[in-house]
Image (cartoon, helix red, strand yellow):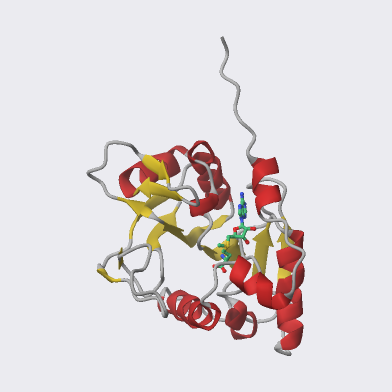
Length: 227
Ligand SMILES: C[S@@+](CC[C@H](N)C(=O)[O-])C[C@H]1O[C@@H](n2cnc3c(N)ncnc32)[C@H](O)[C@@H]1O
């Protein structure tokens, strides 16, 4: 019998269809809006993102975390991609509300591949919603979207390395072993490794954050990818 690959895209698109209010969009994208906006902005600048760099927020949603980078970057350098047309619409409305001087370039995705190549890519809180058998394709798309010297930052929910299985579905999200994720990424031509650090996760309003320890100021475990 030949194995048939499962196409998860209809599931992803259904899961992320959005037709609510702006307030609901923020909660739908993960909440903690002001906190994420500061942390993701600070994180990218700490990694060396400068106004002249081209940047892609892969799985940008409503720009909950990166809206401040729209004006930080030179006009035309901020790009976002997502599978949800409803969230992309909210992303644009958020820039209008904030009277952003620059206009983000937004792409609606119907596969993991995106247009163009970038100096920096952030893929935050996306892998947690992507099935294990799609991780290789996701990483391949990220590697194709990187310039030769580009860097991407991918967050995961880290499964303890001592666990027997490589991945776990907890009913809402996927947890991945970091070692397994790195192997899948390598198959997709993306060289990815843990960022240094280990500190208790502090998410405002959460006494027991879902991920107890993180390695950076971000609320999920961060890995750095290069070609
Ligand atoms: C938890 S939200 C995070 C959004 C944003 N990165 C942030 O930190 O606010 C997850 C996002 O991933 C997007 N997404 C889910 N599956 C995807 C896929 N297969 N490809 C690209 N984006 C996807 C969703 O539409 C949603 O906007």
